[in-house]
Image (cartoon, rainbow, N blue to C red; front, side, top):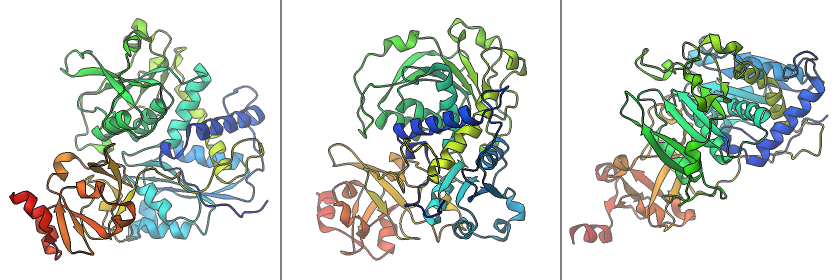
Length: 479
């Protein structure tokens, strides 16, 4: 088998995969289960193949991991491939100050595919920018964990056959959990109803809710206030229409029946203490009492693991508990993803993944390194001193349908710049040496001219860069 490959494909976000491609991963995973499963435990891979006998997986982990790292390595070994591992940054060149960009360029010479876990949001995307082999995101900061979502969806589908119209309750730390962020995007895309049950102060981040509404056409339905919290519970229900970008618009559809529908699954996640300054906070516990409500009578109980105290161990013997099966599915699902990314799967009827990232419909605005605004997310990889010289400030330009207004979304961590932060921004033209107030100038600029523009946080920064205010903008301001 030749190692020559088409243009490299990376999986950084669950949204790098189309719904059809996700179904392709599931078909391939099912093939592996049928061919290689344990005779006594049908959801466990118990045999191997030589499909990837000439290939090497590198697992590059800057954060602790058990299931993700070992299931990837098990998947590669079951495929007949080999593994090399850097699982402790303290004994790697990262401890010497080496940048991720340099590390990934070196590792690409040692392995054919890389899975990376990193504490910085957007680190996996930066790695993909510098990699000559496929990069898979094994979790980056609080951004996303797409392969965990593939395992979760595969588990749900094994129980319910179809994700459409499924109602999934999600409990715990919805703000800090990267797993949850990937999961809710996927649920919305497949037409599921999302029932958030956040711990106090741990609601879904505003930019995640914004994407659910604006890109996946989810409508929020308010329910009753949650006892003792004063906050309003809500459902997120996806409109039955194609998922295309439609900023600031919500479908006018009656979703009243979603309120009465029984819950199909309860997804529990731990307190992500590594993402919070407080190490102890009030946190809900899912136990037999919680699951005793009639609406949870047939609900599957899921957890990405590890669990701490948020899921009662007494539930392990409950017929609804499927979290250990969910963990076992990590091997066939990741076998499927590896084989498809390396174009090795022997079932040629399966759709092969095309190269590169799926082309976005959004124009990309890229500033020169070290000039203009930076992503407002303090944990974004672009704010890491070791990576600044490699990570240009790149933003997707999110235009309103009218084309007259816009906002910016970081390419790496996918955090949107909030309206209050952008209130004083000015747009500078490096060719004309002028600037105009507000981001709206970007919305009205042809895509090919964006490379000449720089966004500054205020007029003072633009003037310090040698720019002056455009006469037309000055006249409009002074009247």
